Length: 137
Image (cartoon, rainbow, N blue to C red):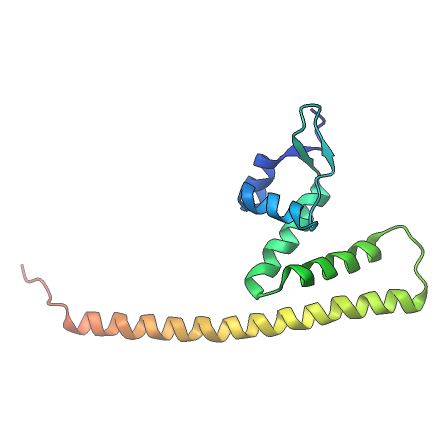
């Protein structure tokens, strides 16, 4: 097999996504394997893995599959060799900026939630410590 291609199991291991999830993203058109082996196995490239990592990072922030598709489309077009006029390039960059802003807002919300969770855990720790008998030897 070509060194540049990976089978789905290796991709799953690298991305920490299940085979089922990767297949779902294929069915929805988010990530299409770059090739198939002679035996029909899905073959992925580093570019495919990078796309899956974008999706994996967007999911916990609450982005929908449609939003993921939109961002990937914008970044694909920005990264392509196709000539973009200035207005088209700026429109694509604005789409990426919008997702960046949404991600930053979600990260801040998660920081607040984490701080509250840590406070709660510390409160429970303190309660347990004050009510746990000390062993005397």
